[in-house]
Image (cartoon, rainbow, N blue to C red; front, side):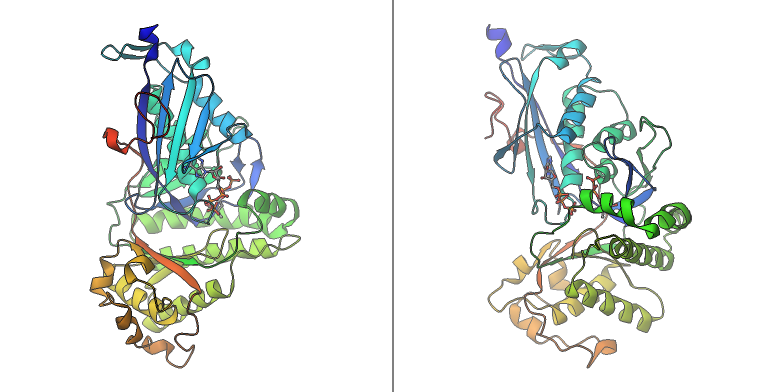
Length: 419
Ligand SMILES: Nc1ncnc2c1ncn2[C@@H]1O[C@H](COP(=O)(O)OP(=O)(O)OP(=O)(O)O)[C@@H](O)[C@H]1O
Ligand SMILES: C[C@@](O)(CCOP(=O)(O)OP(=O)(O)O)CC(=O)O
């Protein structure tokens, strides 16, 4: 039937996020319900994002997905749970021009094609699963005319990957652990949008490393089973920190924000060490970056830069403003210069207009950098060449958006196959 040849598509873009009060530990492994609340900053999708195109057509014979150009299996329970939940909420969709007419009940039998692309390395400790599952759920909700609000959608994305629920919003986001057994109140809410505190500049040091040995999922399971510190953290420490962090964000209190982010990151890694067998996510480079920031903050009298590390060695550094970010980048490049043949624009990516402000456009300019005064004679320059793969300069950013421009779609509008 000619009328049954239509392909209906939606394309969306979703950001990643970095937790400043960490989620580590589940009370329910299947529904992905956490043992404590967490708070994150959404990163600007202009620099780090997932783009996903979803399509539905009566011509599709099964659900299929392509990730970064390669077909992947959707049989895993996390994908299946997200697809089941979103399908059950689908509404009526009609596009008379294209002959599209879908009724609520049709979503159970219609098959989907999904193509997704991360504009940054997948499974490299840059939260691709967070942006990826948030984008999957958001784009399907738009395709299926789901009427639920973003918090309700976050409870579906949560079932793909816990941290994904926080990528449904821009700015500063809290994942409330909730108390219901079915997880319906374990949702993300926005604390403040990305314009609320727009002085902040975020520099991520992507630290060279082998593939990590312990995934977040299995690492946190082992911590829940063996770490007494995790129980103390979830019960006694995080609830107070959440209140303080909300206050710090509301008042743009950078000193408290820094103190809370750094101690929470360090406690999360202490929980990893307290796990049996212990889990090591940070490496010597991560520790060197912590020392550098701690020494600098102490010498300035008031905190200038916050750091936080997820389940890997990459450092996420949050500078209080652009001027500080410029100095931070100069210090980082002094200690972690690129290899001699590296182009600066591929060593500092994202918002690399900061290179000009830092006078660091040419590789030679790095050689002329002086050590930050408080660090003189502490660690020699050049020793750390190659320890950092590259830096990403970004800022707090917006939440998911639909991309109406067909040229950005990853699936062909006629065949529904990857372009
Ligand atoms: N764009 C995407 N769409 C759907 N699923 C994705 C997408 N990107 C990644 N994923 C899923 O997330 C998995 C990678 O998650 P993993 O937790 O290993 O890495 P990460 O999220 O990049 O790193 P980390 O959790 O350490 O920050 C992939 O194997 C895939 O299942
Ligand atoms: C260290 C963290 O990044 C842990 C993220 O864990 P995931 O969300 O990747 O884990 P699953 O729910 O098992 O998919 C801290 C955080 O993002 O809060």
